[in-house]
Length: 364
Image (cartoon, rainbow, N blue to C red; front, side, top):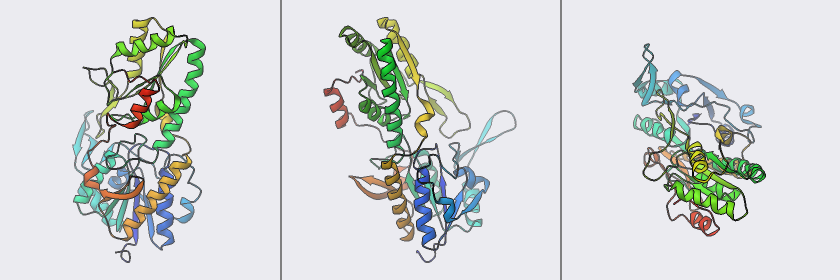
């Protein structure tokens, strides 16, 4: 297979995250060094749909290891099987444009495609594999919620960013004797909130996987206030929800294949705590700062390892697979097994038990 694999496309789908450029670099340098041509596809699947390609030379991918974001651009609103186009009347029509994508893939003379992204990107890849495209996937998300892998690149950097922000919140919370509720990304999985919360010594961590009782959260804040500590730090995953209630939705994006945008849990918790306890409370939404910045050394190494493994899959003709890490080893699983699945935190996850034993409340 490797003799016939001459032109390799690469795209970065979904939201950006630190480490994307490190993966692009690893795949491209390995391929170019092996006398293959690498074609960068701009803005994820949108570039495939709109036929926007460019050749990546060796110098294009040099010096990008430490850069955040992606030199190719990205888009989280372009799933080829569920592509929204304006109908001219202020609304959107959903179309399946996979045949158009296949045509552009063939016109560009691509022999294979490397798709870097999270669960939505892999769902799109699965549909293109069904159309006969040779695809290898790589797991990218700060949320760490891609099924089949115990870690995704970008997560470690986001945890470091979030933990640093929580550390800074500690000082102002202590100075003003406040309850500070920090809302973190993560969507329907709490990996980011859990790891950042534990790393920063948060007093309460609210996760999508564990419904919280606001009265128990309030009691924790009162106990800390009465005990002389005078402040409380709460790390809340954006998908956390009160028992018996739904998740907080900030808005709905009609032209997105994943239209629900979560948000609002921090304000709800801060408002309710202030009402229940009379403690001064503030809500902070950390937001997209969690996606940015220079990737950590861990993410650079992981992204490079993932990228090289993807190249090996290409050279051996093992298409339709996504690179993953399982039990500390880099391997791969079928893309079809990853598509449309979310990896959430098990209730018996050891870090939850460790946090409970060291005094952290999960509001349950």
